[in-house]
Length: 173
Image 1 (cartoon, rainbow, N blue to C red):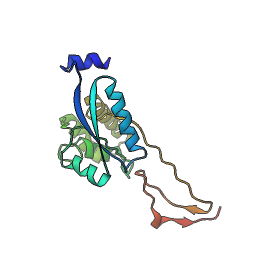
Image 2: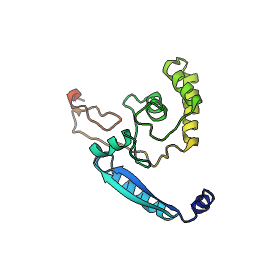
Image 3: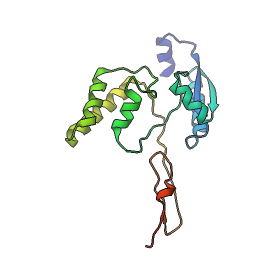
């Protein structure tokens, strides 16, 4: 398994790495990162966990001061083009993985203007496959959102888990 792959990669005794994580941005972000530390330890990867509030964590990513970090992404637009633009284009301050792929860039450009839904969906599927197969990002979990209000109150919640109180309204059912 993983130990064999590490040995084949030249790390038969494992290696040390720092994992940078926020501790106040995602639901259970600290617990998720602690679980990753434990899982990697089982195969010989010795992880030092560096937990910081989001105000310190995200600038580390943007300034390219980390090699291994937790980052969540879900655009308010629900559009995959946003995700690929921010996480797979080399000029993006969020793409700190070193990922570069001309075919990906072409797909992202096509997504921005494609009006044929089937063609755009195919471009998104191909871009997803390229990014997944590069292992530049490793999906760990999908954060589910749960919000409730009393009967008669509606408050829109963005996909990034932010309530829009300015759009709150009272309704009768």
